[in-house]
Image (cartoon, one colour):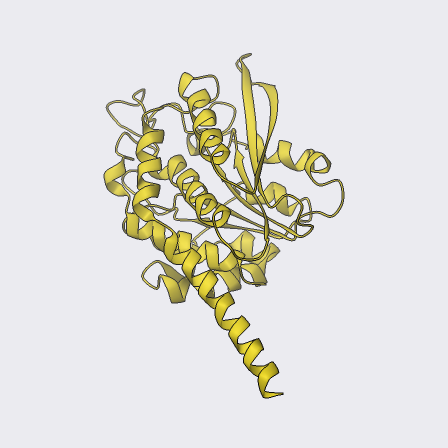
Length: 306
């Protein structure tokens, strides 16, 4: 009995060390490098050259890692102006043979112009926080988990296109609706012919150096247990970032299409980002490697927690 207990304890310690090692391997400076690279492609809106460059960058990072399968969903959308938008969702599957799956998602498109700049509303909006931060978070998590020796966990890293809407103006469009996540939800059977994913988490605007993450009401309505689990880990790993408060309003982001497809999903977003939100000042200097590491290490532990 003592020998059995010792073996169980040793196994538990190794498992803990593996998860902790993965979390500590999460490199905020490397993620900042991803953001800096993505900003070179601005604007990253559908139909713009930077959009295709962003797709290639995501694919190139994933292609150099083990245990991954890359799939794409490509389609066209005709907007109200009669323009045909080429759209692509990118799905990077970690341990694709694993039956039980978790979706980790973000959007990679950016708004087409800095409409909130009072003097230069047609200037480029860099989108360091609103767009690039979520991509960087997923890419660095991919690097860490693809190189780990922990049990084969099934995770689908989904990079949604068209989150900023048919006019690529996001919150600046009174008729905004997401494009990529509804398409993904409508075509779930292409990727999941059997069981649907167990859960999903969507990230947006997560690099701000003064980030305070609050729980989003729609997420609490659809996935309360998952929100509680994520925030509990976050409060321990990055207490300066995670708060027990709720956002002032419900935020209908990409998590909603997944929730409406019976996948319990929640949104992690730092929506309080004034005065830089959707302006020319959404730049790399507003971001923090420490902030990114806090969120990223929380995500790694969450994914490793049954």
